[in-house]
Length: 96
Length: 488
Image 1 (cartoon, rainbow over the protein chains, first blue to last red):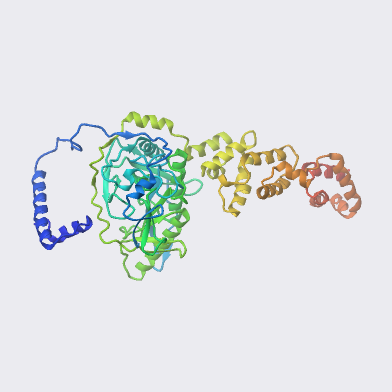
Image 2 (cartoon, rainbow over the protein chains, first blue to last red):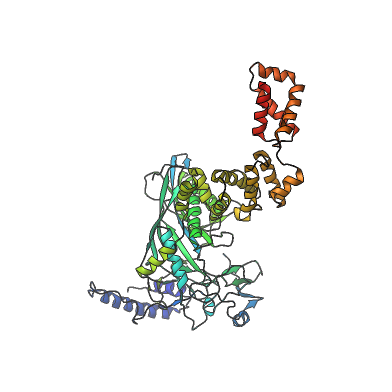
């Protein structure tokens, strides 16, 4: 197996996803199969092919740097916060 | 180019070489953030400069700020670097409350700028080239405040999404002085180019330093990264401490652990930052919300035409246009404000005199009160008026220094102070002659000494006149008259 349970658990931890032992096992198999398929793809000769970055033939759009006198309504944005205090969003204490 | 500075650390086992690479985060001067319509200004109320994207609300998409791209190109050109026609934005993934999206948009493998350099001065004649590996664009994170409540951390997202340029040097720096010089120079170049205001107090420029030590010509040692250095002074202190710490560990037979450290400005020491487990696995990948950034040669060319004079060019111009010596030119060109002050002051005046007053008098006083030239209580215009009074003979240079001290404290005009205190120079020859006559009459001993060939006594006579006039007599005229009278 290309990806064992330990690796799967690490990936899950980094993505903050909780897995049961059974799920960890199943996903290890799935992920290994995906990687194996990638290995197969690697065998194709793409020496003369440019990498495709996006399927659409469009260019990156740019935004103008214009002075806005006011941004989005602060109260409305804070209203959606799960927890707040005054003008601050608050979260359970993070200790460095 | 040469690398002639001696090794800074000699331990029990001999000399050690220090290897330093710096990552500088410079906030791009722009009105809006990198990918949103949030304002990029400093000093607003908390959570005021927010766009929906900045707090990661669903359904929002990034659109890149055109001016920020121009600013990065301009910075790249100012750093003698290559502007890449093709670059990619990637997601750097990690979880932290001040990063609502769970990733920072940055550039990983294909940055907008690569391969630049800065030459730092080693001494009057020698410089050393510090290579810049890359400059890339990325978003700043929000700010967490931990001391407002025992249970919660407070978050201010004003900074979230503001455009930063991360400027990464090669490990070409060999001691803390060089590191300080490099950041000073980099900051200046960006400020001259007007792409970053360089304000370190406000966090517009922050440094991370990678430090390792080795015996000369040996393989590279294990490095430690010191994070978030917010002043050049702290950067230098932190590197000095860290390099010495590593040397003493190695000399006592221990090993260096590769880790991230924090500098405590109060103790002057670096300490281990509790490492977030596996946090360094950022799993970069190209951001699917953003297409590759393509930059046409024509755009680069247009921007290169707007590039203002940079510190190195200014230094040369100061030498050729104003005839300043190397030292003066270097000091005057070191800060944008100093150069501007100098050019204002020297207009219609002797540039050498202007440079002298700035370097020996103004800087001295500013240092005493720990202020920069832009905060000087004496403007270039005011100082100019003082110099004019010296040059037209109203006051002597010596009195001018007294008036200058007074101006510095009181914010009054030179003329006011001179009138108030009656400091005007006495240039009237008749008045001075009368004084000299009196002194000669009353001091036969000294007159005889002079006549016997002791010319040193001349200074004593000048001193007497100055004493009687409280230093206000025109020294040139005093000298002339004393000589004339004594030789009679």
